[in-house]
Image 1 (cartoon, rainbow, N blue to C red):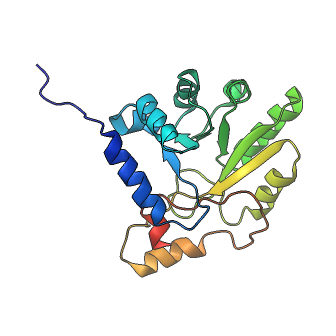
Image 2: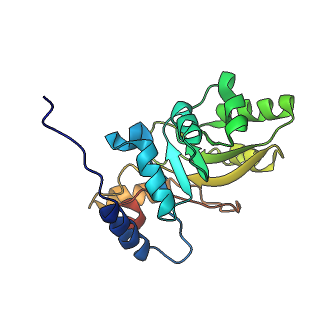
Image 3: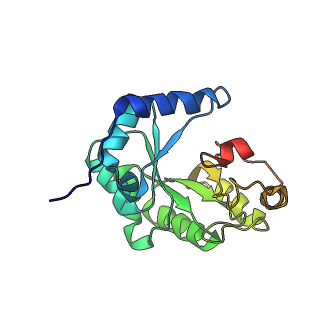
Length: 201
């Protein structure tokens, strides 16, 4: 017999959302990250509750996770944080998903798909500020500009996974700040922090 279980408390979730929102500037929107089955809590159930609480933006790790949310009836923007292969780009268009452009080559693949199929895809641009997993490097500004200006990719955001947002070491935090692109000529939303990092930065 299994002696462990997960209990989801809607009121606790609502309290957390209200508390977090109260600490943010006016107009700053929350994105509910429900990757890995909402960290084991059930992505569909958590996303549905977040929707009822007014959250309209969600993120998953993979394309499969995003499609599952759509098929479960989850509306709003669903951002895929990880890489999606060109063979599956058609699912982005079919389900109205937003794909992270993980590097210049990936962005070029997305652009090529759009031109060859006469479609536009929504993308967020990931910038590597020290995590060294995915993302454009700060010196890739020309490549970032091309994504914004190619006419077939609709950039709806740019973000970074901060590697030291919860550290007390100011030197490390300052290093992450310096690695961010210095030219802010883009216009879409610019999410740049996960929960803790939103307050450190």
